[in-house]
Length: 425
Ligand code: LLP
Image (cartoon, rainbow, N blue to C red):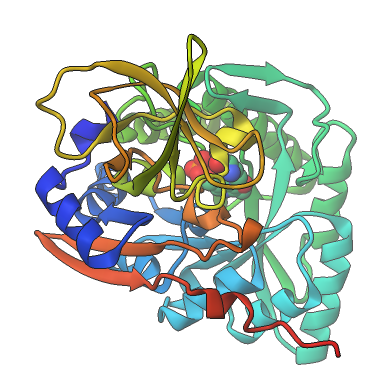
């Protein structure tokens, strides 16, 4: 269970809730480092060049990026905000990769001015915009083109769509990817290093990745034969699954690396192509299981023979995933783990939205107002997707390492919420 990997004691969590108040995200930094090392160290077992880029969309903050940097990871950013955070965190810009399907002129200018390591070009519009920015600044940049290999993977299912109906990337079948390649090969200012492919998120099986590698190399073979284009880099994206509940059975992170490396090696050798540098960009698998959210129980409402609603002082404003994706989580009540399970309750958020439920059926000991509820595996796409709906201030975030805690994102106040409001009298 995810609780087993999260290594901060109930006693310490209780102290942290007292000190920093709730709702509170608590990250186990040791686990973040272990996850990063599982990828990096496994790649090191092979005699090849690689980059493991942390997909900062999963959780971006200056402290988080400092940890990623210490762990020798590259960084995937998708916006001015994520790039700005990288700059503030002192990230080496050569290790930063810029993504996004609608990159603004501003983000491209920022990327070029800071000489980021790579821009992952998503579409023709962006390509023209980038050319313009580079010309204006008299600079050059390294780039990959994002291709959609026609494979969509979702958790345990993957589907072969042939022609990918997606807002991301250049489609292979229609020839758009080849058109992009033609335009960028031998380009004056955009130096094409290779291709990028990302097939989805929270994927448990390796089949989808193996299929994607095959598709990518089929394209590379064609492009080599037709244009003598040789990819120096193949970026295979992220998407490695984690454990939210005991029904989730993810592979060890190292297994994804082994699978990708052997798929690349055999595809390259089958097509008589050189083995390129392999890049991946995990987000969820770096931080997802490494954090919990602590809430305080407030109103409890029992509808006889129907359900008991237990409301907590957070919900969709700090974790939209249950409302948005029907995502499931496990939770326990702090300091009651020695008590027998007495009831099944529904954990409700506090926003004015019927769908603001965190967990529909949670087995708990007798639950009371004032109890502290810990929801596990909230480290990815929780704080990152937080909102100000109903003008609830955002929660605080604490890092714990070697038993020591440190506040890394302050709790917002209601004053913060009106900071940008202008009066209209
Ligand atoms: N690379 C690209 C190009 C991506 O689009 C993503 C995620 C990643 C890497 C990182 O994927 P990960 O390793 O985290 O699965 N909000 C959703 C997940 C959206 C994922 C978007 N792209 C959720 O909460 O499940």
